[in-house]
Image: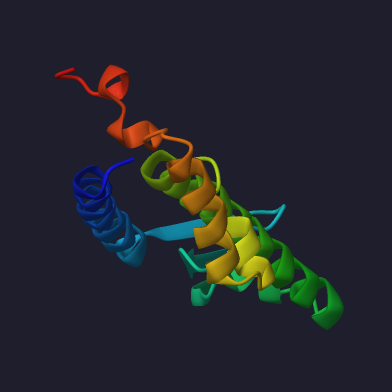
Length: 136
């Protein structure tokens, strides 16, 4: 791969990554308890940003049950966030991108290496392939 082509590809990837990051920064994901009385909302990184508890959930004086329902709702929201984030990253950066790994504490540099190996093989990420574009 020549230097001009590599530079062009890096600029294109930078733009795609910026757009993906902006999309993820605004995203919110929800999960509910089995009885649907508790709803947790997380951001794309899985951080809890809102928790709604229906007053009916408080009618039973079961602190452990309430705590478990909150944890379940939050975990379901985090799963949705990880699924959506991974899909978005894979579309933008290729198969080496994995938001679940980042949520587990994997290092971003490891993901960048995997993505870099994918790009060095000459494959454009799925979002950039001409057959995936509506105009291509």
